[in-house]
Image (cartoon, rainbow, N blue to C red; front, side, top):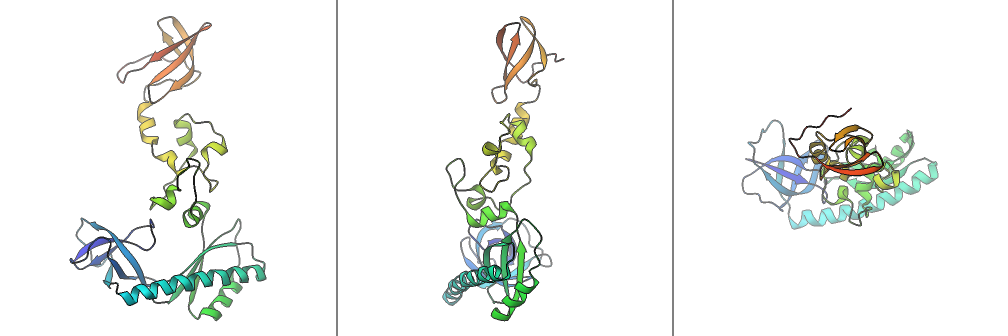
Amino acid sequence: MKLYSVIFKNNGKSYYFNGEDNLKVNDYVIVETEKGEQYGKINNLVNETPNEDKYKNIIRIATKDDEKNYQDLLKESSEALDKCKDLVKKLELNMNVINADFNFDRSQLLFTFTSDERVDFRELARKLAGIYHTRIELRQIGARDKAKEVDGVGVCGQRLCCARFLNHIDAISMNMAKNQNLALNPSKINGVCGRLLCCLQYEDENYLECSKGLPLVGDEINTPSGKGNVVSVDILNRKCKVLVGSNKEEIDFNKNEKRSFK
């Protein structure tokens, strides 16, 4: 037995499963989950001894019939999404349904939606269960998850990171923007989801390392020309501009240099 990483959607979150040692990366497989069988693709072989009590199993390599069934499920899921949207409109619920997914054995139909408030969707769930005769789950998601589902283009001109390659979205804070000396303008530091840009975390560690020993804007430091006040800081190049009297001086900081700040 080996441990494999399996995804159910392109660039979706990876899940781990026990499987026979004859499986390969990019094989399509049927796996056992807590919510029934699922159709997925192996995207990695994990270099770890499988704990058979901790992980579920890969049942088999997917056949052509499995692939056809999966394609039929995608079509049925799309139709279920349209039906759910119609019911939401009739019931006058304040929710925006984003996606619908049947699991492979049709034992569950999952709808994801966004809303600015808590929604009483019990009547909606009853109507959907009466139509599809399977377990219905409605899951409210946040703005970042919605962007990942819907996809789009970011302010950089490239496809959204969350939809392209991010399997897990870490917490992103305003401090990351401050650490990088970015203007705290929502139009500059927010993504299409309206939340802070995911890419703020990519270089945050480097900015923190480079900023060690550097003064802050407004600090008073000693220069060869006397004391002056820092008016700007270039973190990555470890430089700052200091106003000494009416003159501006550019000061370089090497990693081992120590200066006195007031």
